[in-house]
Image (cartoon, rainbow, N blue to C red; front, side):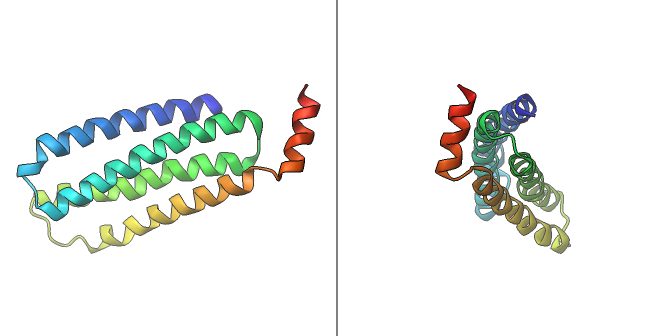
Length: 139
């Protein structure tokens, strides 16, 4: 699972950089300032959660818990739903579609997935005394 998280994180980070550059250089004159700000938010959240996925991959090496896997999966799903819905809304709006209410409802679900991912990461890390016992038994 650790390698999978690392690979997905690398892909998400790469896509984030590509889309960020695309937004800054190509889209800036094509979409409204509000849409550009949303686009930048989507790329920032995508990159920050790609980094979070690298962290989950590293922590999974020490704390092999299902909740750690859930954390990583929720980060990936959050990127797809949160950032993906923003990218989709901007693309459809650019193409002239105006009835985008369903997409506006989906975006906060991605944010909820991010929150749940961070909560699962929190519960995945054992209290200090358990960590010290685990470290001693590994030696």
